Amino acid sequence: MKNSNSTHFESGTDLGDYIIEKVIATGGMGDIYKAKEKSLGRNVVIKTIKHDLLNQIKIAERFQNEAKIIAQLNHPNIVIIHSFIQEEDFDYIVLEYIDGKTLQEVIEDGSISIDYAIELMEQILNGLKAAHDNDVLHRDIKPANIMLDKNKRIKILDFGLAKSIDLTHDSFTTAGTIMGTTYYLSPEVAVGKKPIKASDIYSTGIVFYELVTGELPFQADTPLGTIEKIKTEQLPTPEKINPQVPTFLSNIILKMCKKNPEERYLNIDEILSDLKSKSQIQSTIKSEPQIKIQTSQKISSMGFEEIEVDEILSIAKDLQEKKENQIGKSTIMSIGEELHIDEEVIKSAVRQFEKNNNKANNFFNDNIKGNLFENSNKQKNHPDDFEKAPIFSRGFALLIDFIILSFIGIGTFGIGMLFYVPICHHLFKGQTLGQKANDLITITTNGKKLSFEKSLIDSIGMIFLPFDILIGMFCNSNTKHFQRFMQTIAGTVIVKAK
Image 1 (cartoon, rainbow, N blue to C red):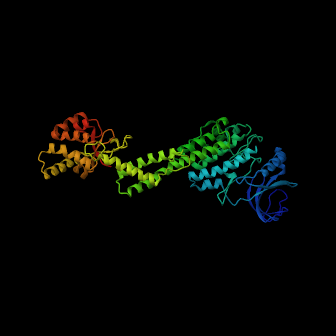
Image 2 (image 1 turned 120 degrees about the horizontal axis):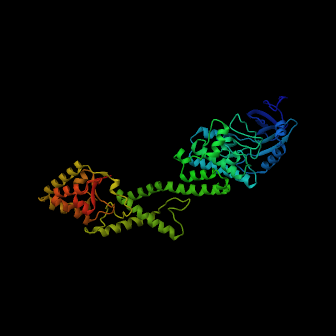
Image 3 (image 1 turned 90 degrees about the vertical axis):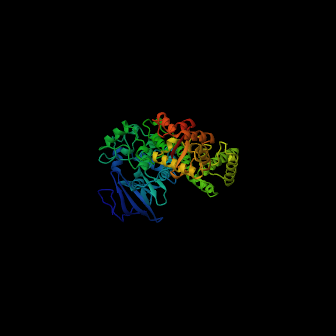
């Protein structure tokens, strides 16, 4: 039954075609109830508005007119207004009932991924766009006014409806000039200016910020303190609060929340366009490593070693991109497409790799098959990327190599090493047997390929090894990796293998 001194209704109250079931929320302007529509048997929401309040702030006519406007909006992300009814002591609006949670509850629950936050925001923006396209402002975008139903569909509530802002809570008003919840107020509205579409964009940006960081950017002990921060302080960068936020997304949010309305996005379409294109590019970048792994596994299954797989993969990428460019697109960097290498392209890359290495069968050719640094103009194996070779390991490697030379009957260590080192470097990809046993490797100081000539010059130092070491100590006292003198001439260095 109805209380005669208020517009509060108890469960079971009959309002003609509607039966009150329970109270959902109460507020200064009226109450919100879940009700049952008798004629259609569906659940609805009834929102009451007190007459005395409407008369007091002179918004009754505007309230009714805007309710009619919103009722005409037909969009899946906007709550439906079924009816607007005027009674003697109160007015009420009949709204679509949403079975779900407010976005505020979703944020408080936590664990919102970046991709899911973008998905939710796209729905919010689509609903807001539908209103803006009909010249309707929301004026109070906040998570509490956004519902997420059980089908993961966003529904925006309270479009264009007048708000009573309560200073004892988290909102503010002065003679009706400031409308909206404090935390989400745009700077221009915070100083009493008339809300515009850019004001809705700002508030939506703050909601987006909260979605991806779990925090509000501007908070103080009082609403007036919060407003002061909104007017004067810079928005913290979202990616600094949550490192998982991509830079492109952080920049979109920052642009939505510019202090100056003219520096924000001009309309919702611009935001949606940026979100779509940049999200797709980000998805392509993220997907490439996984595709690369899959392609590498295919090549590896053909019997190639890890170093050879990397080289074949590089050849395959070049071939694939040339193929795609011939038909007018780039697979590797196309928007919305993932890196993909065709099966026949992989086979062509393998054939080209083997052809290149067949030319290297001549021992004196620089292009030694399987060399670590072949086609390495990008210097992907620079000495700075390797750990320093321990002195003990280097000495023990020399001892092993000396024993091996003695075993095969070469009595002179220096002369023997002159042949032994280049041969081993060819057979074992930059390692002698002693280095191999001690997990060491010889590479070039510029990160390029290790040629026969460099190995030969390096090994000449073995003829006068003690002097080679002493002169090297004098010449290279400040370098990370120790080099013998002839290694300095050759441009080679021994490092700890990866």
